[in-house]
Image 1 (cartoon, rainbow, N blue to C red):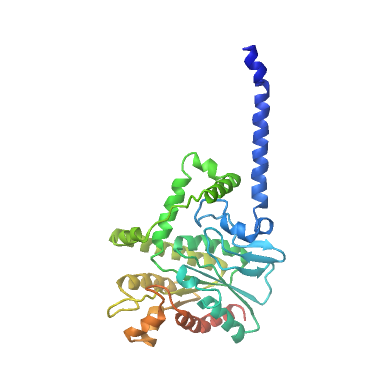
Image 2 (image 1 turned 90 degrees about the vertical axis):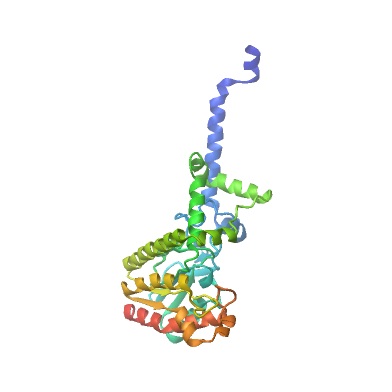
Length: 344
């Protein structure tokens, strides 16, 4: 026993534990304070979000302070375009936030949000216009709702909400996945920024890709009527919650309807799309000020021949530039009217 104690000084064990704990706390504090784009660089920051919340984190800010600007940039779970705002909102500044999926995301310059911003600046130069496009591929109304709450810190004047319907599958999948990840003892592990960042760096070095859901799984799930009904009910509930957020801010709302490229007589809106648009349009009737943009109807009336869908769409879902241009042109008047009514 004496020989063992001469090798291992048991009296020092508590001090060793205390030292290890203190070191961990220092590393955790450093991870929380220094994990910013200003310190680690925007490229590194965008690759490692210090959580496994898949876009459901209410703690991650929309904008980071860099110099004298607020910068919105792409992160691991939010594929935002890089956009900026001033730290202090000017008296004549109008801030509009677009929330949606990959259809409304488009490119920064040619999406209908980017085009509309340019048109508004020409039409009403007395205002300082900023449209921040927070659309993300695969985002449905549940994650749009999380984003919308975060925008309140930046004094929004108007929201453009563009739900697609099909992304409710991705929302549900990722919500359930992150809930399972944080079950049991994992909750303690994932509450540490230092441990999460260390694991993500380890996974990157060892090429441990995060699990991805294939398109076949979504198609199978979408073929089950009960799933579609549940997703539509979720979208309806989330839209109402987002309208309530806009009301609390006294902000106007634009709701953009879905349009698809389909075969058959209703080639801009099939049965599924018509039901989604019905839900969206209903919310425009119970909120003021609100404008509903019927993109399927607009495309059908402007380009009634079936062949037109080939140059309106890149695939069955995403619009070409001409589609974004149409949307911007038809949003200009209603947006101007809403803003001038509230900020004459």
